[in-house]
Amino acid sequence: MTGPVLSHLLLRPAAADLPGADLPSTEEAIEAFAQNFLRAVALPPLPDRT
Image (cartoon, rainbow, N blue to C red):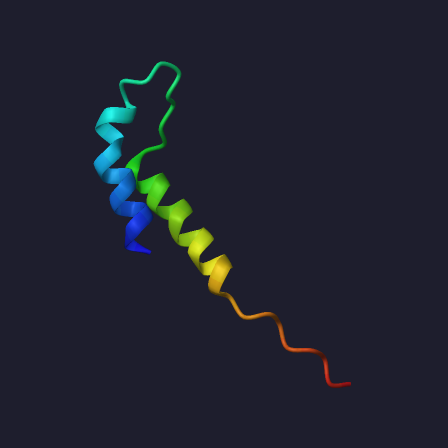
């Protein structure tokens, strides 16, 4: 989980100089990383036992 966040924070200053780069705020990026991580590790719902 820390890899994408650290990469984002370290490369953000260099990527800001790229033409057409519209970067999200740090808070938005961390929220997106957290949501994607939780989606990736979520367990599937249990089947109904009816």
